[in-house]
Length: 150
Length: 150
DNA sequence: GCATATCTGGATCTGAATATCCAGTTTTAC
DNA sequence: GTAAAACTGGATATTCAGATCCAGATATGC
Image (cartoon, rainbow over all chains, first blue to last red; front, side, top):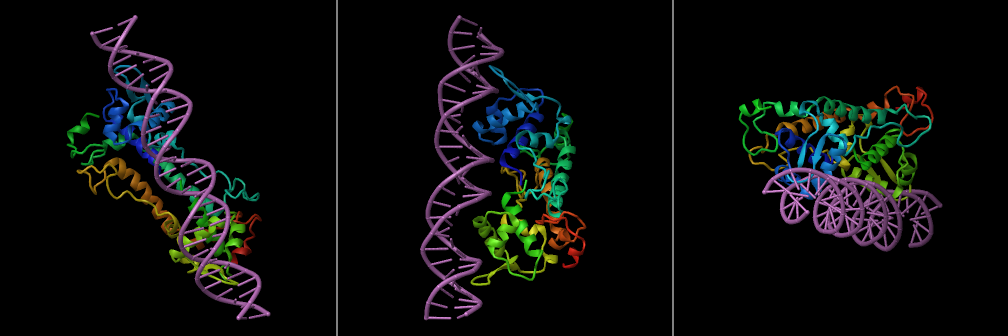
């Protein structure tokens, strides 16, 4: 339901959040996240424009999170690359509907709102902190002590 | 977040549900729903394959709901034209993840599941029964007595 | 039976999302 | 200061959803 680009953006942010101290090159991130390197560059540019990551050019350059993973929400990442389009007004432009959506579009927009709310309260740090043996982007079953590094 | 095609399909079903006794031609539905007629034909074909509508060819032909609006859910309509893709396995194909999703993909899939659940419990009839002055597809403010026709 | 209405299915067109490529710019190490 | 590392931005290619078109099949009314 979310686009491929959103998936890529989330992978990149999670990868950066997994090691917040070091600078990752686009190449290294692409390998880690299994995203086409040339396309990931574009995604990273979007994330940089949204002030979620900071790019550093030149030797030893790369990308780092612009702020702690604990204050970056999934919603921010989603909106950086492909904003969730809430239904603001009647898609059929029926005059009598205007801002007050009919029951069909209200139902759909309520669903969007629900997703927005969930994404807005989920931080990247909270996702990484979950005691899940399968760690994002890592093929090894995660040992619990890894979590303490966060 | 949902595709344009899903929006079109829902409009068509809601239009048919608003007058369950008569047969609507694709042309008439297109006018009512403001969907490109030639494209709506394709959408209706998908709905027919999913056994949500029944097509009748020839003079006086057209489309009718295949079953009462009270037993057609939004989810069925969505799945008829563009199935909600739940995350079944690790998108990176990491061996150690397999069926057990990591916390990132679990979070995303949980959101999908939430939407699926809401759509699965909302019937077309329940949407039309809501006391909302703005009636789907109708430009006139709906009088409450209209609801009794259902 | 015949003309007309209507859906069906295939071929095609268009535009947006996805993906690639490369020349240009910035930064660092030496 | 120079070469190499790395991001930037623009141009281009590819893929697919969205949309169109039309000949063919089917059903009805007369």
